[in-house]
Structures are given as structure tokens and as C-alpha cells.
Image (cartoon, rainbow, N blue to C red; front, side, top):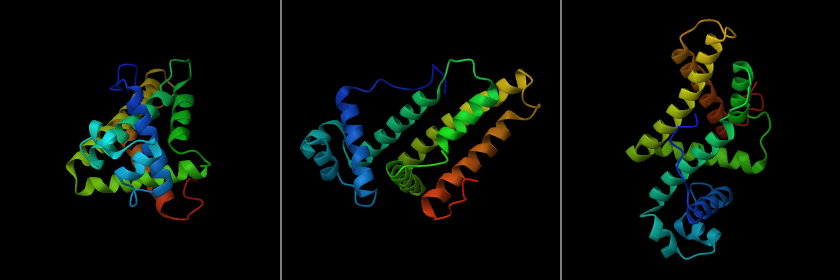
Length: 184
């Protein structure tokens, strides 16, 4: 997740559609989500959505890309944080101690969307891209910390993968259980 990462330019209409999709996911969850409900949130016709996307699946795949780009723009920094500060901020972005209701609902919807990757190769490919971007960012921070002598010399790839597995587990646990101490 660096300045040259794969963030794309989103048109105004695409952003409006992504924001409407976000609102619809919060309101209905994945199971009740439909093109009609997204169109209603957009205050447009279903035809206007089908102009941009062939199906609900295509729209949701774009939504995943959009959410990833938004995350990336929020965590990329050019400031002079130490690697440990950057790592802490990154983890706190992915796993905040407190989630408001909207954020909690969105994260639950993301777990539902991730479950689609079990049987749908397009979702699997999109989540692979998301995960790779997160792991690459973790690896970059760890390598920087090793290079600056702040972290001990470790295999940055293995540590990044381990950290990501832990983060993913906590995210899933948080969305699928009532365990209040899951984050601890």
C-alpha cells in the first residue's frame, strides 16, 4: 500500500453508486441486498445501475475494490512515523478497539461477502487482491523496521502473513460472535 499501488480513479457517478451500496449493505445486510434496494438508496432506477454493472455480483466486486482503495488511502502515510508507530496505527485501523454500529454492520457484511469467495472465483480473486495488498503493506512496515534496527531480524513475509491471519481471525470472530474480548 504505497503511493504507486493499484488505487484507481473513481468517477463521481461510481462514488455515488458505491456510497449507495454501502448504505444498502448497512440497512439490509448482504442476504437482503438487491439491485432494487441499492437503486432506492441512490434514488435512481435499476436501469441506471445496470448501465454501469452487469449484475449485483459485478457491482459488489467493484464495491470491494472501492472499499479497499478507501482503506488504502486512509492508511498510506508519507509522514515520519517510526515503523512501530506505523504498524500500530495500521493495526488499529483494521481492528479499532470500538466500532460504532455502522462500522460493525459493514464489517459483518464484508465477512458475508468474503463467504462468497468459497464458491465464486471472481470473489476469491478480489479477496486475494485485498489480502495481498494488506500483507504487502505489513511486510513493508516490518522490513522498514528491521532495516532501521527497530525490529529484530525476522522473515518479514512470514511475520506479515502470521499477523494478517490473526487480524483476519479477529475480524471474523468479531463479526460472527458476541465475544467482547475477542480483540484483546
